[in-house]
Image (cartoon, rainbow, N blue to C red; front, top):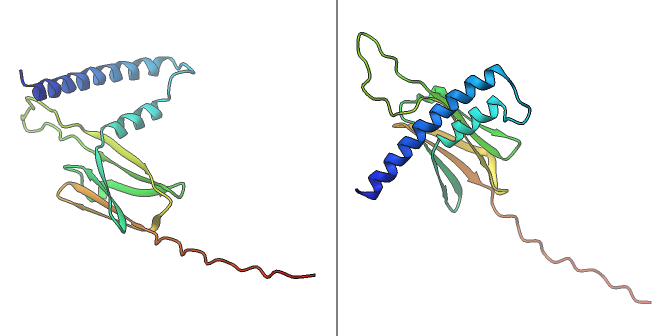
Length: 161
């Protein structure tokens, strides 16, 4: 068997098993809350982050964040900066509903909320951020601040007695 196919099959099976565990966990956590369990919000956010793939490019004058989001309209996406240096991309991919007697044979594309957080480096200009969504790909450009001017040596006058 082709290893790439096997790996893909393993990932699909793991995703299905994780969804089953998540569903069970949600049902159990609805009935009794245990203090050592992570909150539902934390679990939901962690799943949303795990399901959102991104590429990051480091260019001489900017950082580029590329996030695939097929079928998501630009109005359904938010790009924000939190805590002065955390870039947050979030939104929701809605599942298409069955209608007019049409039924899905198989649904592999995930729906639901998605989110990614990126801690920006110190030289990121949070005032110079642009975002463009085209053909199901969100591209966020974060300009870099110019490097600080090197400090000139300061000459100290020596006083004699």
